[in-house]
Length: 103
Image (cartoon, rainbow, N blue to C red):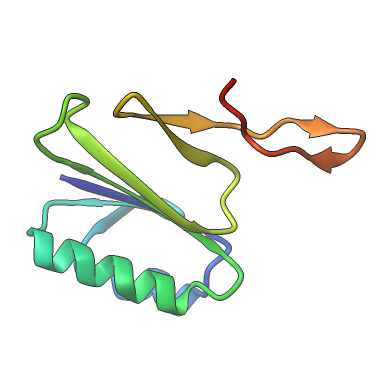
């Protein structure tokens, strides 16, 4: 299973993804494709996203049973801690966005 989330990307990219995945909510795509198609969809999204952002999550044989990767201007970051992928929501300090830190 694969889930892709697109933020602020061209409509043509969203239309192209509907060839392979369903779009139950604007910018959210879900489906089941093999690893080669998954990687090609990722490459296509990275090339065509312009100033937007792309998130891809898929099921795999890890401790968490899924893997996540992000590229571009997304509202969150993936942080790895002891082999686990965690999501970090950057806080704002005095109107400026701060970096995610693990201390």
